Image (cartoon, rainbow, N blue to C red; front, side, top):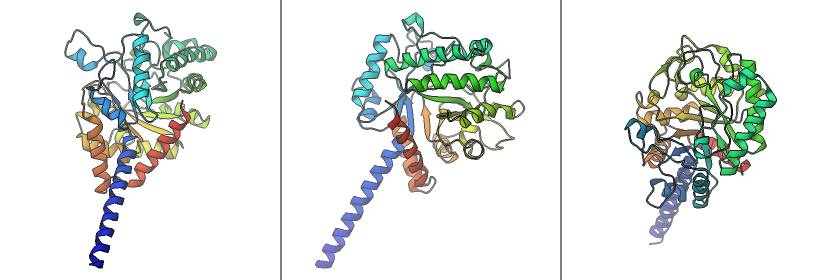
Amino acid sequence: MKKILITFLLLFCFISVTHASDTDLRKKIAQMIIVGFNGTEITQDNPIYDDIINERLSGVVVFLKDSAKIKANEKDITKNIKSPKQLKKLIKQIKKLSPQKLFICIDEEGGQITRLPSSMGFKAQVLSHKQLGEKDNIKLTFKQAKKIAKNLKKFGINVNFAPCLDLAINKDSPIIYKRERAFSDNPQIVAKHSQAYIQAHNKYNILTVTKHFPGHGSAIGDSHNGFTDITSTWDKIELEPYIALDDEGLLNAVMIAHVFNENLDEIYPATLSKKIITDILKEEIGFDGLVITDDMQMKAISDNYTLEDSIITAINAGNDILLFANNIKSNNNMVKEFNDIVFNAVKSGKILPETIEKAYKKITEIKSRLK
């Protein structure tokens, strides 16, 4: 009887410890996903409501327009933003619901790339990267970026997916050059203007996420729409702005592009490439900050890889956070699916536990510095 009791107690302790460790693992995995969501307010019937209150995600990203609604020719294409008052209320609501500190993200580069247009009453319209690069006035770039950062701070946004470090190499690029998202084709000009841009955001404690590593400016295609091969157009000088900013200690976080370069990795696009993220960005350049994927629902990834394969490969490549914008297409179960895939991958040995631990420590340390 005594032996049975001891065996029972040992089994109970084992189950309890296993359950606790599994819960802890899921908590850490949750810090590795940022998602977009539908709605201009968060009600209890909104799928993201439970994800926020139960700490199942690391952060959210807000958009002005819903790409899926645009594609479906719907009359109302609003995603999350209708007015300054509404946006401020929405973000305040998100923060109040969350027991933890969240990354509240936006793409607010300036010029054409704005989620906060003057037509809706927002008052922080600034010049595009291209216009600032042409003027080549560092003080002006700092002032313009400061205007953005101050405005983001006012609304409670703490992460800006900007600036673009892409070089204006390909004048036919539909997503970079034609939308005026590159400061210059000169890496030194790009570096010095990006430095001013980042310093202005640092002043307001806004985390900047530079993009799109290892360079999207030479690309002919748009990775939103499909496979984008830069093998014949990419030049190593596209790495120079990243090297310069890292040397200055200003490279806070880096977003990885969905571009394919056979000369850098003959199998995977950059987002899924250990050779590009770990070998080049982390080891060759020496970057030890936060690594974030571009939207994993872009067709360059979603049309060519299963969700499970893309998630596991992206994490093993060296990404700390995966972005699912839920804008090109919407998946209300994305947070749960992500956690289940990563959890099962760790349990089956496809992802090492220390990979999750390392990302978790990096993410929480950066969050501790944000207000």
